[in-house]
Image 1 (tube, rainbow, N blue to C red):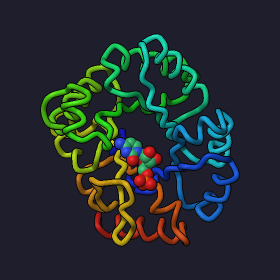
Image 2: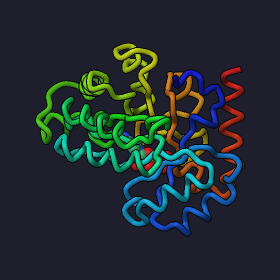
Image 3: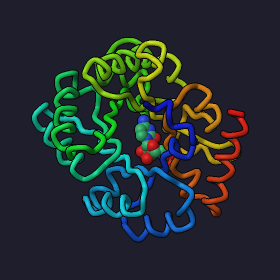
Image 4: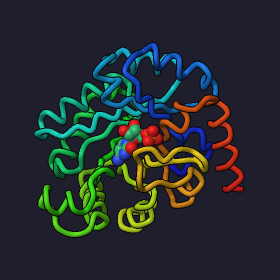
Length: 245
Ligand code: C5P
């Protein structure tokens, strides 16, 4: 299904990491008519509630509601039912919740999706990119390398019937090799050439991320923090299209 999205603008998700509707409106103003897909994280969702999703949908945008659900299967199922009713296009859970929780989440999502409407994409978060090998081995008591655990979590996610995972673009080739080309990858950690790395470590440019096989890119501050957000957006689209030509 994802491979049908030939327009790269449908595959670049702008992270709206703000806490008020006013900030969102200010951010969207110059980007209106350019961007197609946005991400609402915990900061914005907890501050503005479901109204923010309705507002963004009314603007004609697709919405990834990034709440990283992680709870007992029955609660995860209920959470997904509510999220589907909000009209989200993409939602996620922590793969660490296990196969039963992820399968229940998918069931909830199907129950909440209106008849005839497309079910939101359901994505698993593998190992958070902020978790390094030492933290994973010593604090979480999970042995092995982060890469092996990411692939293991991706396979669990697939087994539970989810559509794909959130991962670093650098992990995409091994995930696709293990789980198949059609298994969706959503990748943050994107930095166009010349932009500030910030707190991200395993970063790539948008062109590299698509070349590595990412299906969706999540881009935040490089666009939302720019003096000319529409200009940055257009230069990213141009660079990606030139790279794919
Ligand atoms: O500003 P920046 O491009 O770094 O924003 C990346 C977005 O992706 C943020 O909303 C962040 O919460 C999210 N994210 C991430 N790493 C993950 C999962 C989500 O950076 N592993």
